[in-house]
Image (cartoon, rainbow, N blue to C red; front, side):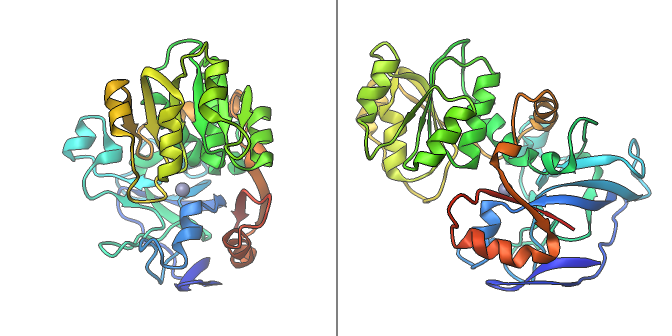
Length: 343
Ligand SMILES: [Zn+2]
């Protein structure tokens, strides 16, 4: 088969690659669409340490089942599927607790951090265990389904956050995940949604996708503006979708006493927090990791048009041109958010 192979750091080559070998509990998926994730773009230069070459990256994908292992049941050739980015063990203590996203020794598709190497979806075919598969509803295209993973990351963060009807929410950072958090909050019955970002275009997109107010820290006094939109108290919840000290502080500063701040972004390994404010204002800091069962909900939300993934999609291109698009994303081309490749 053909695949886009990370041969060495910063060197992606579209070339012949050995076909996947199916385990008994796996299906073979013919990839129809695969999204380039920010973690792939950051990973290709070696800085994250999680894409050690040689590797076929790619964990946001959708396709058609073309073959089945001996022990697979309930699936058939021709089924349209997408799948979790994480392969978790079924007999793990956390999985049994319903926390498969935290299970030990889980493996991410298209990642090689040293302990393992699992080739991903920038290829014509890949093998996937049946327990991470999901059916794609008829109304949802392969391209839309390839973007379910980042929406599910946003949905997981919203699910972990205590939310009452009409609660106000602040979203710090309007990149792809932030824009999906806004859309899921809107669908979830949130009240006023306040988006914060340094880029005007992202704030505009945030407003088109459901935010009521857009604030720019270079221009606006964030605490004052948020108070003016929330009865002088601050927001009921905040989502931090960047992951550096400044934005963590901004999220904490924008909520009312007793609120929850859900932390999704993790650009830097450490961030400073205003400890006394967190304690004396009784603020709950909630981390959110990956996805834990949100795929079916997100697929249906896309089918019902409650979440618009196309708004974030910049380009669809052939997999053979993948190296060029990785480079353009790596160079941070203005306006380029999401690229989906088609083998
Ligand atoms: Zn990703």
